[in-house]
Each structure stands twice: as C-alpha cells, then as structure tokens.
Amino acid sequence: MFERRLQSKLSALTFHGMKINADVYEYFSLPVISTGRSFAYYRKIFFGNRSQREVLERLEGKRIVDVGCGLTPYVSDSMFQICRKHGIDFFGVDPKFADGLRLRPLDVAKIRAVGGRGKISAQAPGLEKCVGVHADELPFDDGSVDLILSNFLLYAWIQDETSLANIYREFHRVLNASGEVRIYPAPDLDMDRSRNSDLREVMKKFDITQRFSVRWLNLAKYPPAYMMTMKKKQVLTT
Image (cartoon, rainbow, N blue to C red; front, top):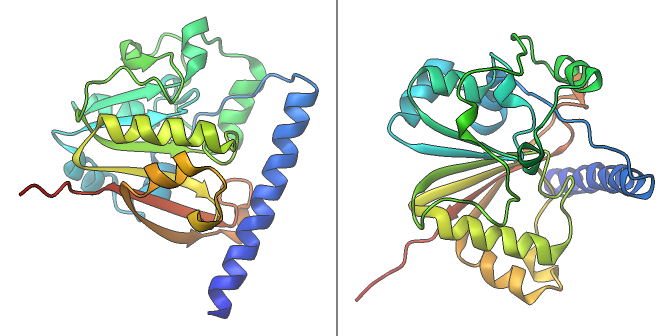
C-alpha cells in the first residue's frame, strides 16, 4: 500500500512538471520540438521489453496507429520504419504532417537526445502512412484498428478533460472488439475524481490497468509514471 502511494505521488510530481512545461510553451507561443524515439524505446515501454522479433511476430496481420508520433517516420530505427519493413500495417498520426512537417536542427538534436540512432531522412519510405490529423478525428473505419500507441502526448500535452473525452471516444470507435490503447507516461488515474461526466462515461467502456515505470538514471526518457493499457470492453449480446 505504501509503495502504491509513493508511486502515485511520484507520478503526480512528474505531471505537475509537465503542466508547467506545457504552460510555458503556450504562454510564449513556442514551437513544440518533435521527437523520433526508437523501436527499442517503444519495446521497453509498451511491450514489456520483449525482443524485436517477438514484438513483430505478435503484431503480424494487425493494424497499429501511433498517435502523436512526431518525427518517428523519418528515423530508420523507429517502430514506424521497422514495422513497415516487415509488412505490418503501421500508421503515424500527428497534426504537423498536415502542414508539411520540416526537419529542423533542433528536432534532429532532440531525436538524438531521446535515443534515436538511425538514419534521419525527410524522404524516408512509407510516408504515405503519415496522417496529418488530430487525435479526435482519426481517418479509420469503425472497428478497424487493433492497437493504438501514444507516447508523451495524452496527459503530457493534452490535459483538458473535454479533449481527452473526445479522443477516447474516437479511440473506442476505431478499435476492434479486442483492441487496446497503450499510453505512456500516464498519471495514477482515479476516474471517480474526474469532474467531466463525458470522460467518466467513455472510460467505463474500457478495462484499464496501470503499471508503474521509472528509470532513475534516465528520467528525461523514463520519468516516474504509469504505462496505461485500455482494453475495449466486450459488448455482451443476448
């Protein structure tokens, strides 16, 4: 019980710092520097540090959508590119693509800072699967997505409960019957404290589990927070 309370408090401190950071960016109208995290990072966070081969085998024949993917499609060691090479139906979603995302020196530096070691190219293959929309307007058919990933977007940048309700409603629409959402970092979620009735209602449509994660030697990449899995609930028919 003490361990859980400690984890919750550490996570709360993480998101307090993220809110301050987001407020500074908004106040000064600063451009958000995009990132391009590696497949190795995604494996550690979203797939329990399973091997690349095992993850790819599990994803074979599935459609995966990375919401808030940033510059990952431009980096050769990203999950986007490695899944593409193995014939996995993988999409990157980021509204910046709609405006013609450009690789700036600061973006490239950030990719390196967060562990991207692959080749970076504005003409990388597979960019037709980069979708320039917001998270609440996904261009996928109902029930057509197996897995949604989101890294350092929801709760880190998008914290408004009305926006979160709209996004989760859209996630629920596009996920198939056994579909999942995996989010990192996420706070210790207590929906009973949510003031937004729409958010409470849409979250009831998912089975939610949380696993605490932190790496003290690399807090910038792995801050104290939860990896949250939201599994679409089965609809019982009579």
